[in-house]
Image 1 (cartoon, rainbow over the protein chains, first blue to last red):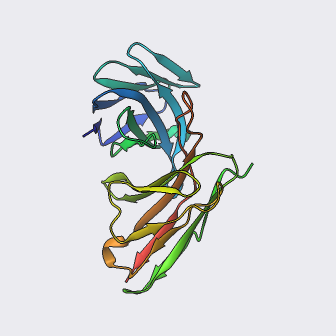
Image 2: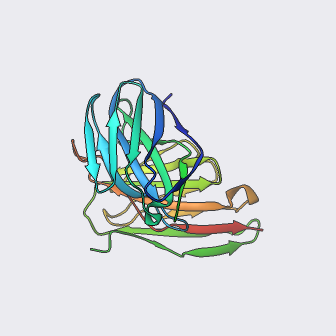
Length: 112
Length: 114
């Protein structure tokens, strides 16, 4: 059974204070690791897919990296508009339907 | 492109009532999914479909039913609503082909069962 653990549960940063969110995973065979952003009262918004260890992807102030056991979402010089819950999910090669297993998320608050 | 749309946005049900949550996507995606999200619990898969006429159970299917008669629509049916079904429900879709596995989510339906 696939498992995803995200840490910390909550993170408070000052504007401009860089940090990283962690996603540890256990999966029989990783097909893909996904990062989503979720704002209060809205559906998750897709950010990145990573497929193999060593892969990195960037979007504005966000950079996602992947190892064989975990993924990091690095936030450089965050702004208040980066405040959201960040969700990590994994997909394996077993079964059908390209199903995702989600972590419980990291709630990020960026203050002025 | 509206993406994934869900109706209603909010609903209050009494115990034992039934309702259907509607989901439509206009991206011509083959795969569609229903999740529920409870505080501190993460998203849990209820049912999914890999194409019209094909559905399968996810992690938490009890108390729910689905059908997929068209590529665009994937309604979720709640029969005999219970307080344990109070949650936020999200529909999602994905292309389903290799290399395009990301799922795109709708805005959600917040359901309260009293």
